Image 1 (cartoon, rainbow, N blue to C red):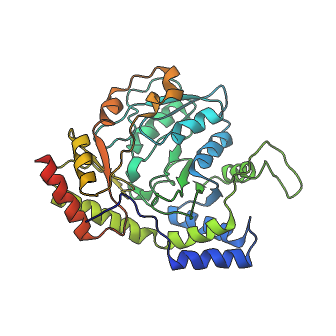
Image 2: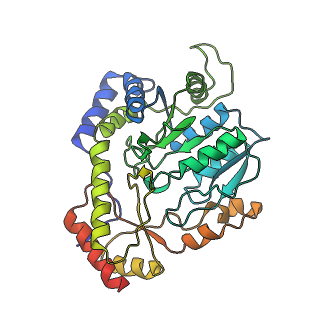
Amino acid sequence: MKIPFFVQEFTQEMEDAALDALRNEQFVGGESVTKFEEEFARFVGTKYAVSVSSGNSALQLSLLAFDISSKSKVLTSTNSFIASANCIRMVNAYPILADIDPNDGNIDVKNISEKIDAIIPVHIYGNPCDFDSVKELAETQKVPIIEDACQAHGALYRGKKVGSISDVGCFSFYPTKNMTVGGDGGMVTTNNEETAQKIRSLRDNGRRTKTEFDRLGFTMRLNTVSAAIGRVQLCHLDEKNSRRREIASIYRRKLNEDCILQENKYGESVYHQIVVHHKKRDEIRERLAKEEIGSAIHYARPIHLESIYEEYNYKLPNSEKFCKEIMSLPSYPSLTDEQVSYISECMNKIIS
């Protein structure tokens, strides 16, 4: 049974929406963009949502909206896609990289005493981080929280959607995420009107009105066709997240060892990745590959070990050990129960 790690989705409904937008709307700034923003804000539970060109753009523009600059220090997790830290350097700020809780791979801020100017907690793999400890640190230091929810569309923390529990939430719509726009895209969510307006301006070259510009900005807009596809994907997000949770539940039942990362006790994960933590990781992947079952590693190196971050000389032992023992199993909604059971059977043979 050949099972790829990921299957890119393209449906007739997505195609119809894209063609309709191409034929009937402006390519940039069309009606679909406004509707997508309104619908996404409603989904997350915030007053405002501002679409942008990527999750990286969402993070970078959010930092700029809070005046983070060369004199600022920003805390984030070392176990994430590199954009979580790159956005800090893109605004010339100093990245403070935190180690992780090896039970779930999320940021651990308990030992952070350094003065910071903002926090970017990452809800890694679609599983909410320990947001109570993040909030406590932010309140103590009186700094904004910019949620990196790029992998966590629809995840809950204490009954509220991530992206609505901080100053701003940042989402990515890259094709491997729980929902896509048919390519790169992102969204910033917030309840603060001034913050939303700053990000709208920054994504559009610093525009204040049609003919006036009052700040330096970028071209980081989401195009109309992508927004139209995003609206279709958003309509099906809850059912797809539900299926991902079902798949994780089957893995947990079928695997002989309890090796899937823990879910936050106050959260509900949407399992962007279903991650296994096991000392036999490399052997498991090799054997699965022989059975034509795909797998991946998220992430093979923590950010502080990447060459462009070596100069900071961080020693973060939990993440350094963690990255050598984790792997991601297929988790996309179109997986069948039979396929999940087969993957589990193969895993059990290898582990035993």
